[in-house]
Length: 229
Image 1 (cartoon, rainbow, N blue to C red):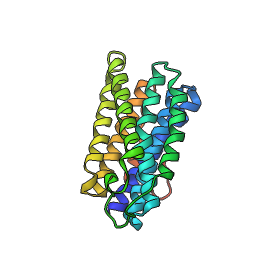
Image 2 (image 1 turned 30 degrees about the vertical axis):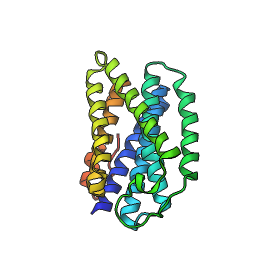
Image 3 (image 1 turned 180 degrees about the vertical axis):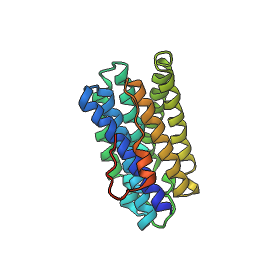
Image 4 (image 1 turned 90 degrees about the horizontal axis):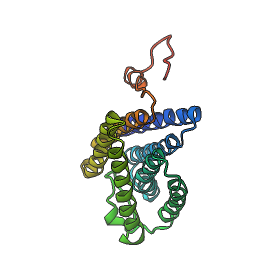
């Protein structure tokens, strides 16, 4: 059951990222591309969560989970929010950080080796310097940027602000409950992704569409091909 919940959360998050990417191709708004990248990272982290639940955790799965969930999600989403305000310098900084994050995540030693079915704790397997300290800093800066931009655009996008802040809160809650198991963590991820997507879509002037969730919950119907909007 935990594997199915984690897989379902990854599927939802990846689909939402795809919707934002499609709207970026249509509109050319750079913030949509960055938000899509952030949600894609979130989806890949959740996919690693499903992998760990299904086949057990090892060093490879943990590196993917930590890279996409711990290092990349918040900064990429934050770059999108800064681009919404017209901060052009955020894009090259985001690209440089993404390259640095990949290098650090691949090179960092993991000791002791990871095994078992429980979600590993970073402080048990990774040294504080450099990887964990970079992660703490990047998440702090990314969260501050997300919250700050949301509050700055409160009057212009009140609904988007509420949705984004709620999504950030639930994403943080998912990290906090990681020690309780895969299922609750995945549930937090799925709901947070939906809120973030709805907030970002609203802030960009688009009408968020979550109708595909109904089709996912109902499953395939005989003789009918569901249309995903």
